[in-house]
Amino acid sequence: MNFFRQAWEVAAKDLRSEVRSKETVNASLSFALVILLLFSFAFDPSSEQVREIAGGLLWLVFAFAGTLILNRSFARELVNDCLDALIASPASGAQIFFGKCVANYVLLVIVECICLPIFAIFYNVRLPQQLAVLFLVMLLGTWGITVIGTLFSAMTVNLRLRELMLPTLIYPMLIPALMGAIQLSGLLIAGEPLGADNQIWFRLLVAFDLIFTILSLALVETVLVG
Amino acid sequence: MRVKIILALSAISGLILAWNLHTMFMQVPDELNQGAAFRIIYFHVPSAITSFTGFYIGMFAGVGYLWRKDLRLDAFAAAVNEVSLAFATITLITGSIWGRIIWGIWWAWDPRITSYFVCWLIYVGYFMLRRAIDDPTTRARLGAVLSIFAAIDIVIVWKSIEWWRTQHPGPVLEIRGGGGMAPGMEAPLWWNFLALVLLATALVIIRMRQVSMQREIDSLRRYAHAF
Image: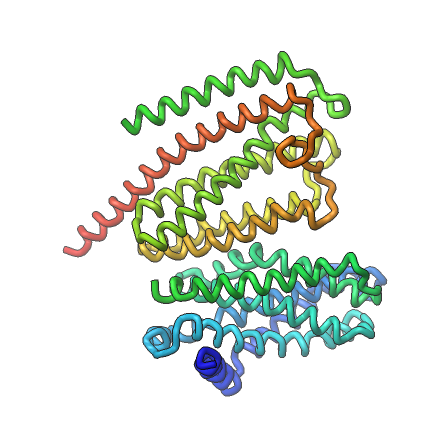
């Protein structure tokens, strides 16, 4: 239980500083709105076609908005050598990582929850009756983005080109999770029932989340400390 | 000694390739449906297997580095991954040429091709990351972590042919339960695989030497700057 308590301290610290400054959520949200605007030029926003590709559009927005949050996650600790202080603290690497993951997750889910209705309004998409299932897909997909993103954010924190490196490294890694999430969200928004053959995407999402959470927890000490 | 090994490996590989080209073009008949173009498989599949094998060896070398903290293991990992990336590029290009002839399109967004491309991109990212880090131990450490992540991703790639419906031809080799190739047709493929593996080994040895030398030059340069 001690593991979670210390991790929660880190998460609470990150969330508190975000509540006070609101810098990443604001940036991420405005960026998401810009992408939502740009989509309207890429295709006819009033066509029926939008419903078919809605899942993909939604997750593109989430993934792009997510990197802004993830980029700042460790970078914000560089000022005044806070990262070194964090590493020197009694909390282990895994606890710091897990705490940061939780904080990023909460922030990203908040951004997603604001973007989803805006997307529905902009593109005249009716949100599905199975909203709870869509929410579950969002939670699972977002955890995948967060866990890989946070680890790679820790890896790239000291690089000069970290803002460029992070998206280049994580998007290819995230593709299995994004594929699953896009497929399921697309079906749900199109109002189609989720048959037995779509269960595999759920399993893929869960397996992806589990595998990479365990792997990240195991390797984060190496990344942060060496 | 090292030069002799490189020369011997390259010579054997060259001989097998030359003999194989003869078998492929003079002895093996055209395939019933695909005609002459099917011969691309003799380079496409062995390159793919070589690249996958290399990526895995690279991962184990990375794990080895994390365990023993020996920079020679990192040089080996970097060399193997780089050579594998070259073979992966060959796989993508030969596959694309085959697709143009048989499917009529250069590229199909079939899950397996997509996943392979994803895998290729991840390893491009691996080298971008390595280039961005100046400190050799940090570079080795983060490279090792990334290659472990990448190797797990390859498992998803490898499994994808079973998970997703696919336009890519199913397994045709005996070893994967395909049994779709005549024995006389399959043999040159494995000989080519052997030749490519030998060639890859020679390239890895050369590249490893270069990586170690590079590290030595860098440290000498730093040493010189220190005064």
